[in-house]
Length: 174
Image (cartoon, rainbow, N blue to C red; front, side, top):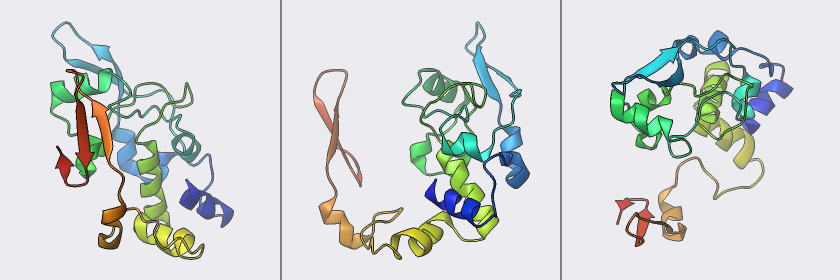
């Protein structure tokens, strides 16, 4: 979002810029309306075109799979990969509501980063390093963990269905 705001400040991006005008592939995303009796996703084109503002304010209709039960169901029915895979194809989630209709955390922020890349010409991590982190002296802030940072990563855990803690680490699940 900060990278996009920098481009807005420079006059290179407007909040109401339609996402598909910068990233035509965004127009291919559909809105998930539910599932038929056989569990097949029912999809349609969204009626409202998402803008940079929708992406930055989490009102794009794109929701993380772990916040909404329909996304894992969609993923299971279609074989779509998780956003946590890091695969570009994982950004092709369907929208779960019309842009501007409500708020929810999701991959819209990833699409906004892709808009920054397309407009600026640099990868988002390079843009953030050169335009935000380095000028502010944020030497230990990066989009990806660098080797010298690994020892300081905090452990993350959740409780499994059996009530036992499951620990997540950078190298995977333990």
